[in-house]
Length: 245
Image 1 (cartoon, rainbow, N blue to C red):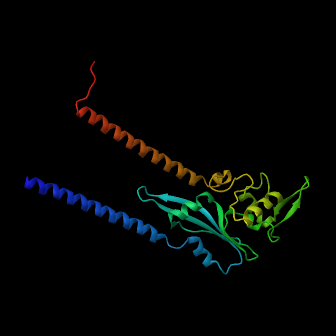
Image 2: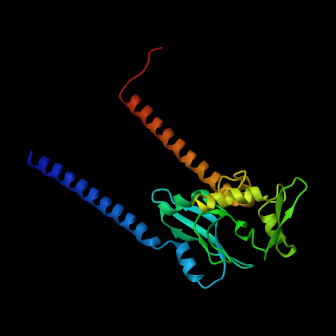
Image 3: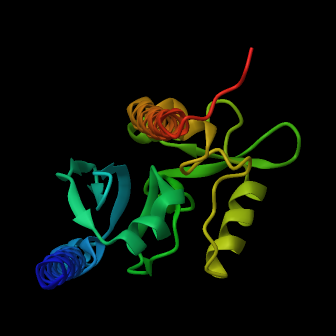
């Protein structure tokens, strides 16, 4: 009996050690995740560009890696005047990733020519509307007016997919109302951002990755269900249950 008690105590001690080691591992992993990302990368870019007359920081791409402890990454495109630079992927905090998840392809922060800095997300290109350096309002046959970029900046209209419906003054006023109240603006038909139709056309690789990730998750779930069902059947048989013919 004494030997049996020692064996039980040894097993219990081993279990406690395993639990303690797992707890340390989890704590270290969470601490590492919290420390690895640090300051908001957008704020860091802002500090780099503080002397620039105008700029736009755009959420160019997003990625998730890992299953048990996933890591989250952003890629930014920085527009300074006519110079456009795509930055390497940088790890971000989970909460920051989730907060900005709806804004793929949109401007997260911008500084306009008048020196105003905006941190409310909006479709890239709107920051140039109303600036006579880039274009003008042109009256149309219906009595309204449409924004027209000068020839040098006409590519911006194509990037924004304005060729299909243009940007009317009413649409722009709607954007201005959202922006002044600190609400993200996704376009007159909500065609921008992660759920927008324009973004889906412009960034097919992002959506391919998302579909592949979803497919892998479903496969893992189905495999787990299959394994559990298999174990249940084996247990059922090993206990001698059966049905008569």
